Length: 469
Image 1: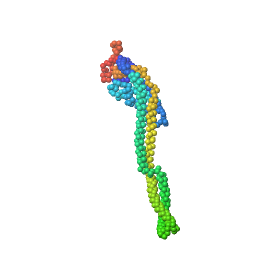
Image 2 (image 1 turned 180 degrees about the horizontal axis):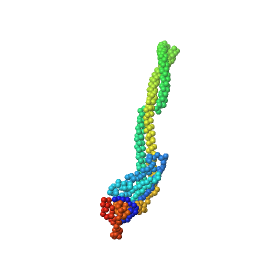
Image 3 (image 1 turned 90 degrees about the horizontal axis):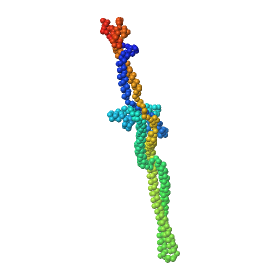
């Protein structure tokens, strides 16, 4: 049965089982030492990368990549542990060839994540540590991974800037088509309503005023022409009477001259007088008839003039009605044209805004490309480690020794606690209520052995002897 033990009893028990304890301790230590000594050397190489602030600032150039480069530190570990970076490093540097050939690239990526440690240092730097069996490989990977991370980050930022520029270009093309459509609609509207547009209002008013003045002038000319025609109509009767009178007088003189000639010779004074009067009367008659023809021509001219003036007045009235109609329609077309111009201005403003934004996006894209190499600065490159980082062989041997001693001691104690043997009279008196009559020593060999009569809980009170070692 199990029982409690004092420190002295533990030491005595371990001494009695020193061979077993020593064997267990030696075996466990040998196994632990073998494990420690057979573990491969692992070398660690570290590099420190500083993230430089972006220049120039946003007060000078509006960047299309909204995320500041300093914010990448918040997710730098996740990004460095991402498959694209690690897979590129594995393929480029031929890491884990056996693992890649046996289990594929995914297993190599998982193993590399275990061998890689990323720790943020301060507000704008991070430290990358890589562990490998080869110190050269550890140094090369620790120096190459920051460059790959920078390349992927810059590639992503440049892709974002390029996408922004492309988006602005596509939007600009769409808005350019919209602006062209509105311009065509406005141009067609002006063609359809030419002369009735708001910008032609003043011209129409001046045209109507000019036509009104011309109508007034033509009306005055028409009144003058009609007055002239009236005067000519009144003078026509008088002219006709004078011509008739002179013609009658000429006829009378002609008859008188014929009668005189039948009576007197040509040299007679009466004949000469009548002949002279007839000639004078003939001249006067012809003159009267000429005036009559001129009056008729003047009356015809005045009639033609009146007709022309009336036609001009009619045309002017038509023009005045056209100008008035234009003036009446101008407010209606002004509203519709205002709506068209408003929508056109909105589209044109959007287009101009997008054009300016695209120009800024192109500038920002160029700046991203120019400042790409200065965003990540390796301030402490990784060197080739001279000593392995692990395993700690001295510490491992010490731990193996402590574990071996612990297992040996634990084995001895457990065996002692499960041993029911009684080894001396004091222990016998503690465990039995019967008096001890005698202790017989065992004199065999060099080791003293004593044979006791152990007590028994049976009714007889005595059982078979027990040997005490």
